[in-house]
Length: 149
Image (tube, rainbow, N blue to C red; front, side, top):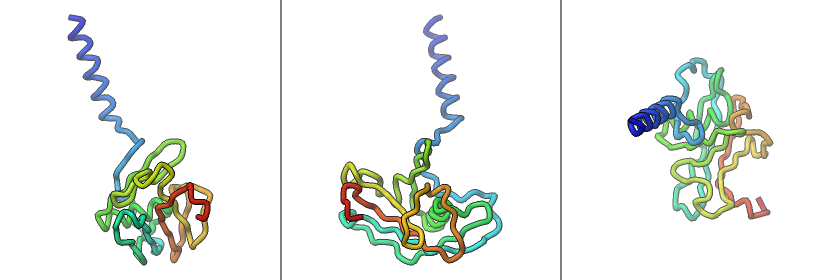
């Protein structure tokens, strides 16, 4: 009887965890369906590490919307239109951990993705940095231990 109760509790916990979902790692390039009004288009580039052997994405375009105008929104919009995987870690901060199959630490413990807007480093998260029509977003895979960045 105790065994049945334990299994029932364990099963209930698993069902609860699955139905609630987890925001820690999401691979969701989908743009929210509530988006209706395009307010502009931004240019985007994605610069992969040379070791990956991937072709960089240069002069791509992504729409921004009235309710989704952040750097992260633009990346997700581009990814959804181009079948590109984007992995985001949500916690205290939202952090893009992977783009197009290349993830942080794939090429060293101090590597990962950073972005600039109009060739300037931005000191806020991709999910809070808002964009305007005509902005240029650059995602670059970097080695943080390289102090020349």
